Structure formats: C-alpha cells, structure tokens
Length: 263
Length: 303
Image 1 (cartoon, each protein chain N blue to C red):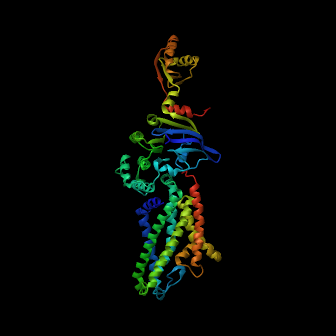
Image 2 (image 1 turned 135 degrees about the vertical axis):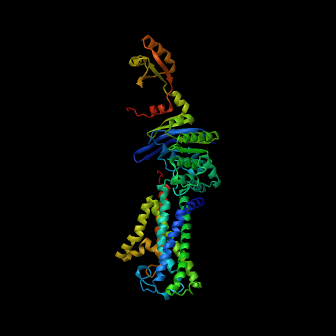
Image 3 (image 1 turned 45 degrees about the horizontal axis):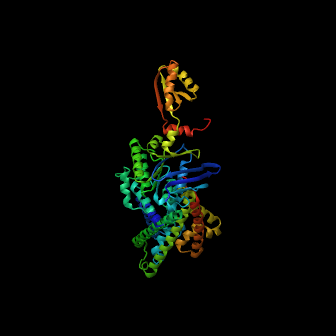
C-alpha cells in the first residue's frame, strides 16, 4: 500500500498537474476573497447567494476564515476532477495493466492512490488557506475591517477547525470522483457526470423539492466544509456523506477487484 | 523446484458464448526462449493476460514459476511483462514512468538509468513519453519489463514499430537474457525472428493449441519440398504428372514445380524426367520455413 502511495505521489507531483492546480486555486482564492472585502463599501452583494456581509461582522474572529470557507465548494469540485481523472486515466492510457503486474493486490493500489490524492488535497487546501488569509489581511483595510480579533485564540482555533472541515469535505468530493472514475473508466465521462450532478442537478433538484436538500450528497459534502448550517446539521452531513461514499467505494472496490483488465 | 516456467492445463476463457481460449495445454521449460505464435484473435493476448493475473480463467488452471495463477502476488515480483504494446503516462518522462513502476514494485530507483541505457534510451530518459517515437515507446516498454530483473520475461509483440537494427537489438537482448537463465516467453508475428531465437514454440489457432514443442521438431516434421525447374516451361505439366503418378502432391508456383517429397526422391525424379525426355535446369530440396509451416498449420480446412 505504501508503495502504491509513493508511486501515485510521483504522478501527482508532475508540474503540469501540481502547478496548474495550485495556480488555479490561488486565482479563485484571491478572486473570491477580494470580492468579499472590496465590495463592502459599495453596498453590492459580496458573498454567496447574492447576500451581504458587513465590515463589522468580518471584524469578528471568524473574519479570518470567511474567504477560505467561500472557496471550499470550489476546492471540492477541483478534488472531484483530480481524483476522477487520476483514477480513470489508468484505463484510458492502458497503464492499469502495468500497475497490476507490479502490484497484483488491487485494493492496495486503490488505497495507496486514495491516500496519495488525499495528501495532494491536503496541500491544496492548506495553500488555499494561506492564499485567502493573506488576501484577507491585504484587503481588510480597504473594506474598513478590523483584524485584531482574527489572530485571537478563538480565531486560530476556528482556523484549525475550518481547515479540518474543508479538508474532509474536499476529500469526500475526491472520493466521489474516484468512485465515478472507477465506474465509468473514462476521465471525461466521470468528471462531466460528477460536476453536472454537483453543480447543476442538485441545485435544480433542491430548488424544486426543498426537502431533498438534506439527502443530496454534494449539498451535504459542501455543508461539512461550512461546519454545518441552521438547516443541515454537521453530524448529519458527515454521517450521510460517509454512508454514501462507503457504499459507493464498496461497490466500485468489488468491481475493481473482480473485473477483468482487458484493455 | 519445478523445471517449468509456465505450465498450462486445460485453460479456458469464455466471453459470453465465444471461447477466446479453449482447453489449452502447454509447458514452457525454464531458461528457454519460447515463441508464442498464432493469427490475430487466436487467443495469445488472452492467455498472457491470464498468466499475469489480469483476467480470470473460466476453466482450467496454470502455474507460473511454480505458483498458481490465482495467486499472482506469489510470482509477479519475479516476472517482467509487456502486454499489447507499451502503455505509459504521456506527461511524465520515460525515466519518471519507470520510477513510478519501480516505486510500485519496490525495486531500487537506481535500476532505472542503467535499464534506459540498456534499451538505447540513455540520453532520452528525461524527455516526456508523449514525444517518443513508436520504436522508443517500445524500448521503454521493454525496459519496464526488465525492472524486476525477471526470472520470466513475457513480451507481447516486442518488435512492433522497431526498425531492423532495433529488431536485431531486441533479438540479441532476448538471447542475452536467456543465456543468463531468464525464461523468455515472446509472442510475435515476425516468425523469421522467432525461428532464429526460439527453442520452443506454442502455436495457437482460434483459441486452441495446435503445436507445442521444440522449434526444431516442428521444422523437421514439416513436409520437405522439391523445387523443380525444367529447361522448358512447357514441360512443367509433365513434371507434375510424373510426381503425381508416383504419389507426390505437387503444384506450380512461379514457373517451378513444388513437389512434396523427401529429399532422397530427388534422384529418382531426375531419372524419371530424363527418361521422359525432360531436362531439368534445377532441382532443389528445401525445408519449409517456420512461416510456411505456420501457414500450413493455421490455415482453415476448406479454405
């Protein structure tokens, strides 16, 4: 399993993937956080769903991680794409047969891959945290936001909790991508279905029948990053997400172990 | 320890109603080069995939290096393989692709550069795989197969895309490995190449083993041919008639009579032709090549 982890890590650290991912999340981190702080004085909506957050609110200890939380869903979608692509490409490149000749224990390959991609996700989330915090400090003055409480004990504690929640949410989205990758064995199909479902179909379904929101996987995985909400509890989202992913991983794990590798 | 590198017993693979491999039985002795031949779709790659644990047999069993193929983890660390051409990550360099496989197999990373040099990619290891020519990709595939210092090397069409000098190098590489005790199980369409290096042959046709044994025995058992050219082409039908009247099958190919017969009948034929007033300008006994034997064995009845 460790050998599979190190092998996958070698693939993940290729510059075209690692740098482009970090540059993309950096761009979104700066963009999302800038909108929050630069629009405070304009009176325009400056946060998600067309809502507003004021300088007074952002001056509290949670202002430090506000931008970070905003980017969380985007990080989840990014992880979904990376996990799906890294998994399904073994079929499209035909490299799975090489992997299985060198490591016939198929589940070890999957677990090693998953752990390596989770480490990649942890680095991506940490980098996003740094980018959003740096941007928040840089733009706080322009929005009239006080930063004194941001680095208080509560602020730092919340930063740690938020990092954990965003990471867990991101890895859940990644696991969903991995499931789709193993199921469809094509990066394009897996990513298309994953993104379409998470970004569009769940939004339509949730808007049409509000009672479904508490059962939709992407909504719940996104809610983990928020640390829960007034309508959806944190523990419910974690349990439901883990249940969905547990069943999904068990099914694709079984298929992966049993399926002939004939491509 | 078993003296067999591969032992296949009643191995069968069905896809729905179609039998990709049917009740195959053959053995490959340790330390030999064994050619694995058959027309496209005859079940070669299916067999190789089963030997490598990539697909499960429908029936029968096989042992590789003495271990059952249902437990590939017991023998694959000692096996190198290239199946159906090379497959690597296009965005990684050749060397990095090998390092990924070395990490996965638990092999030392310092094996990578010498292997690249051995297959003639020493100065191109840092280039991305997607920039490689077909021949270079093939060489990288062979290098990957050599990563474990294998006791058994399984190569599926290793010379695809190689130029004549590349084919020669691969042939020498296989000879070199076999001389060091590595068993080489190689499928190829280049039968002339196999004839030169393979001591053993396994021949498939439509999922069935039609020959397994030494290459020498196969060639010796093939019917020899007398190629006869009369001085005047007009005499060809008479030469054919003489052969057939003496119980020898014969046919005309490229202005010569090809008569299936043992070499020692050549003198008798020469005498009979002379008595019939036919002068022969050439009379040569030839043994069919592996390619000719292959076509004879693999041609369908009625075609």
